[in-house]
Each structure stands twice: as structure tokens, then as C-alpha cells.
Image (cartoon, rainbow, N blue to C red):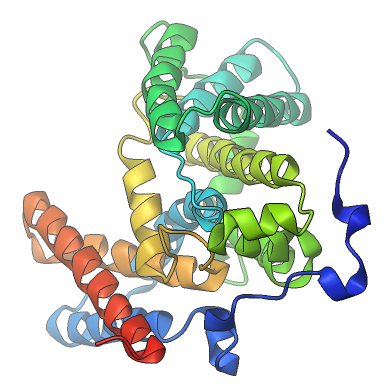
Length: 338
């Protein structure tokens, strides 16, 4: 299908919805990010006062490594959410990409080629999801839920149900390296985040994604190439999941078919808590990172305090519901609805 973008005159290019332009800070999705960042800082202060190990270099580096992989996945998931979609398959894509890349490497494929082929796999998965949503009319929830099962099964098939060992030492060396005292994984996440932030905030494609999520029919009538936007969103989601899968593989030094379990839920939670709307049209890379940082901090704090993981799940669920409720109250007050 040919792009319709050329048919848009300069005066017809859609602007961001009014809800994202009421104040300069709304560009970043505030005040939800402000609330979540405040909670994160408060938790850091409490942990610093109650434990002697939280602010140690080793613990902070561990938090940065964990939030890096979580954030990369969440950045990708944000894109389908912006267009009022969803991607539940990313956790399984993390596992599949890890074992595929590991299998290629143990078969003697050079590292750059193995990485490139794994990224092609990500493009293929994203294209399949987008085709199913756009052409076949299958709801995104259903097709990506099917992918969650199918790609996890594919990971077990590729690896014969076992972890893949014997990876090149260069991978683990990279994953454990630090530059200026900051883990290489965090630098990788920062580069990806900046690129995706630029796309969302500075390009026509980013504006069109927000416009499509805010009002799909208006976007279509304005001449936006819906097909291109849908394919782009799901390809970004799958490719970032593949990148996260390879980084996780490098960090663990194995390709595991059980990796990434429930990562899709963590990613969606980070995006939503960070200000993204599941109804589309609102969200930011910065807010998503803040959401991921909060959850990484909660998990780290619970481990240091010896709190049962079940309580972590309860706290996470309550937090998501609370933040969404507060954000809904804020939007209702802005719109004058009681």
C-alpha cells in the first residue's frame, strides 16, 4: 500500500491532542511521572536509612543492570500501546531470541551475523503481529497472546528444551563491563531510549502514532497511512524484545528457553505506571523508564529486606491500580468532569 503522507498538506498535519498540550510539562506525560518518580525517590530514601547495603556500589549497579533490560522491553511495548494496541508476546520473544542467537553462536556463526539474523527474526515477528492485526482483523490481545504461547514453544524447540551453553566470552565481558562506573547494559538502554524518544517527539511518525491512538478514525480521514504505523509499532516492540533477549543471554552467559517469563506484564505495567494510557494516544519513553525504575527498586528492596516474592506481586498490583486511578482523577478534573 502506498503511503498517504504525501497527500497531507502542511496545514493538515495533525497536532498532538489537546490533552498533551495543556501545559509544557504535559509533553512528558506529567503529573503521573512526577508521582511515580516521587515514590521511587521516597523508597530510595527509606531504604538508605533502613539498610546498610542499598546504597552500596554493587547494589546500585545491580539495579541499573536490571532496569536496563526491563526498560528496553517496556520501551518497545509502549509503541503498540500508543496506537491502542498491546503486545503480550514480548516475554516469549525474549526467550526465543536468546536461544536462537545462542544456537547460532555455538554453531560457529560470527557474533555480528548472529545478532543481525536475530534482529531479522524480530522484524519478522513484529510484521506477523501487525499483519494479523491490520489485515486479518484479529484483536491484538488475541494474536499476541497466541504469540506468547507459540514463541515460547519455539524457544523450547530450538533449544531442545535445554539451555544453550558455550557462548563466546566476549558477550559476557560486554554484559558485565562498566564505563565511567555505569554498566554497559545501562548505556545500551540509554541509546535505545534516546532514539525511540526522538522518534516519538520529533518525527512525523511519532506524531501520527499519538494521533492514531487518540482517534483512529480521524487519523484515517486525515490521510495517515494506518498500515505503516501499525507495522512500525509492532516491529519496534518485537525488535526491542529481541535486543533485550540477546542482552539477557549475554548477561547470563546462556540461552535459556525459560527466560523472560512474565516480562510482558512487567513491561506493560512499567509503561502504564509511567503515564501511558491503555486507550492509546498518551505515553512517553521517559515515563516508561521511571515506571521500570520504580518496579526494579521495589524488587531490589524486597530482596534486601527478605520480603516474600508474593508480597512483591501484591504491592505491584496495588501500585498499578493506584497510579491509574490517580491519573484518571487528574484527567477528569482537567476536563471538568466530576
